[in-house]
Amino acid sequence: MILEKTVALRHELHRHPELSLQEKETKQRLMDFLKRETSLTICDQGRWFYAVYPGKETAGNGTVGNGVMGKGNAAESGRAENGTVKRRIAFRADFDALPIPEEPVLPYASENPGVSHRCGHDGHASALCGLALLLERYGCDNEVYLIFQHAEEIGAGAAECAGLLKKIKMDRIYAFHNWSGFPEGSIVIREGVMHCASRGITFFLQGKNAHASRPEDGRNPSQALAELVLFHEKELLHRDYRGKVLSTIVHVRSGAKNFGIAAGDGEISMTIRSFYEEDCDKMETILKEKAEELAGKYGLTLTVTESDVFPETVNDREAAEDVVRAAESLGFPVIWMEEPVRSSEDFGYFQKECPGALFFTGNGENYPAIHTTEYDFNDRILSAAIRMFGRLCSIKETEDD
Image (tube, rainbow, N blue to C red; front, top):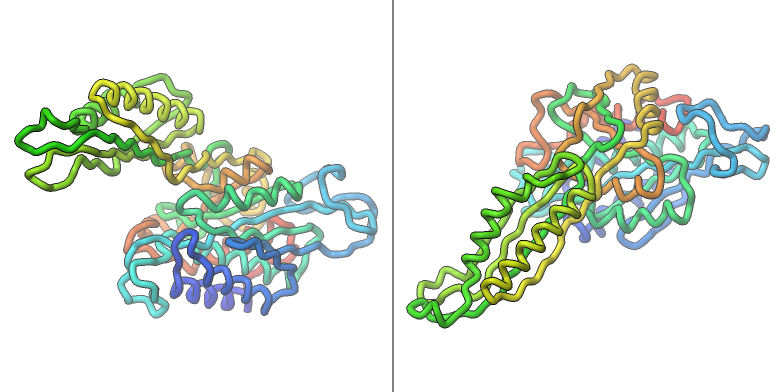
């Protein structure tokens, strides 16, 4: 039973979560499952891997099949030896976890203290394995790539995996995310920007320590940090931007809690996000210019670092329409989003190389939100995700058995 196997796999992954760039066992579990359950070709890429289904061998007539994808371009698609044009379609799933503790209340609770699958990546990876089982059982005419990606939570994995799309030209790439606040099993989609671009920026200011009784002997960064906070709160978001922008201070420090020493260094970290990467670039430039001005004013040395850089996730119009047609053909309710969600997704790195779409599968309107201690992937939506993947690569039979 395909659904039973994928649910069992999901629970196994949930028991053994690993943080970004540490997913060695998770990757091996997924590869072992595919080797045991399918005949797909598995390509190990070190921190990540992909599996390939070559497509059925059918009588060649030089045409593309009548799947959801619509008309194909022979020059841009794979061609079987017998002359049949194939589509190259990729699907992506992430498999890293989060540094969030989990209480041992689930029968498959995390066995890794302080780490848990509170974003649902265990469900994403299991759903992609479910697609592999569908391909093994029913086959399809298209050439299908299943990309299992590491380090999505820190924005590092997709940038590395997207190189595959440069080497092998894909016609489409798809992914899904589970999302709370929408009816269970609904398919939620948006044309254009789906997830905001974002990045973390840290401004480190180095001055000079002094005895707390003689602060004039040192260079304390506290005033510069205070002015940068005020600038961030009062001015940064009121410039001319292409779309909506947001910036959140996540950490501020000056010196240490030692009452005999005046602070000699400090830092401030913030997350900036926007509908478009160009606005993140603009905000970062504005902040850097202000920080450089303040460093000069107070005799400080400035160092700036970036972390967790995510591009915007931009759904191609035709790919989004493919998702809608697939959902409607399966009888799933479709919800069009009016605006992008504020959170970020590194799937946008793939979309820079290939037209694609990321869609949500609704967890339920009152289901706990992701990244919270109450959240666990909703097994009841696993079938919908698998069947959507199957229909998007034109598998003729996708009933959950």
